[in-house]
Length: 151
Image 1 (cartoon, rainbow, N blue to C red):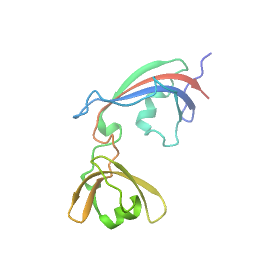
Image 2 (cartoon, rainbow, N blue to C red):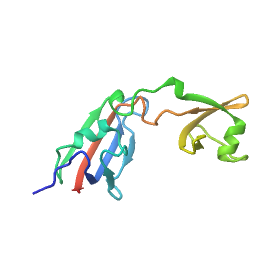
Image 3 (tube, rainbow, N blue to C red):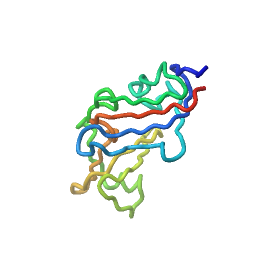
Image 4 (cartoon, rainbow, N blue to C red):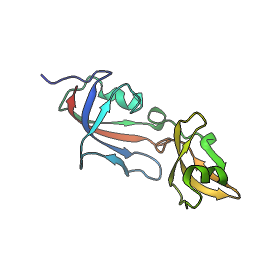
């Protein structure tokens, strides 16, 4: 009998996440079908709960797809997460001579030692503007899944 996906299952699966709205509609964000399958430990925050929920109760071997509106996936875009930082802080985190193009991902270290990332948008005087929203915030998604194994 095939194993059932439970709230803390460890999965081996193939999945494809396609943008289902916005200017990138139809673009594939990630696809494991053409490479190595992915692994996912449910309930640990690897995926938002809303993406995990449709997996629960499924069985090994199941293939299915589901759609989520932005507010149920990675949330709506938050304009407060578009932030300007000094070029000095940027140099401390990325190096003095590093050049940036729009949508380059830059990792920053928080005062508590944690890491967070933002997409470079543009320079404005002596500041650099970054978008700290999740890359999929504000986007409806289509998720296709093939569950290979359940532990």
